[in-house]
Amino acid sequence: MALVLVLWVLSLLTIMAGSFALSMRRESAIVAGIKNNAQASAIAKSGIAMAEMMLLNPDITKGWRADGNIYEINANNAKIRLRLSSEAGKIDINKADETLLKSLMINAPLAEEQQAKLVGAILDWRDEDDLVHLDGAEKQEYQDAGLSYLPRNKPFQSIEELQLVLGMNRTLFLWLEPFVTVYSGQPQVDIKVATKEVLQVLPGLDKSLVDAYILARLESAKNNLPVPPFAASSGMNTPIGQSSPIGQNPTGQNNAFTIVSEAFLVDGSRALITAVIKKSGNTQVTPSPFDVLKWQNVTANRASLFTGAMNELLVKQYDEPELGN
Image (cartoon, rainbow, N blue to C red):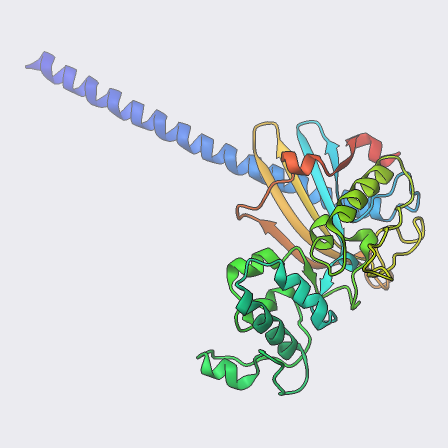
């Protein structure tokens, strides 16, 4: 009996020790994951700072362009990819006319009969009167839909406000997000800093010319050459926007930019941050040369910058010390 009792006690102690070891391994893995994610997030934040520095560089051979192309930085234990987009190269939902909004909605994942209604609802949301646009929506339409709010009849304060417009849903908003802005202040889109996605939804632009222009613009960035002019199609007499000469303001008219920074560590950890920044008007009040208009730590399943499609947009690769030269 004594021998059986000893065996039972040893078995129990073995089970307890194994359970404790397994628990410790799990906790160690969790702590390591938290540490790695925090490290990746910190590196992604440093990428935002690096992008700001490169946007301020007046040397066209070293400064970065905010036209949707990608730059990569190799650090000791991580890679950082940054995609910069000028807000001047997007569709301003407060300034765009009905034709431009219709062209955007035609390309959206939206039933044809809903396209005109959503354009009208956007126009009615931002105008100051209660007159209903054709297929639009004012106070009565929101009340009939059972909504607890009414259109603001003022300009959109953020693109997220689009989600309140009658007829908008989450899926459609996520599709529209890369195309629209409230920071441009221009009724037109600056072609020279617009991304390929935006150029493809603009009215009057030939798709083949868009592809050729994106390739030419990418090659000019790789070879430190000025941004090439866009060859307008026969259906267009004037381009949809002009940009300042390279060297004076190489990244857009209004000095507002979206920066996407993604850090990828050697252990597989990653972090992605999206920031909208604008050049500070008064550096004496704000020590930073940029004001942060929006900051988002992306935790959702957003498309990574480390994909084959994004590789095609890669302009330059740097080792970290090279940025200071």
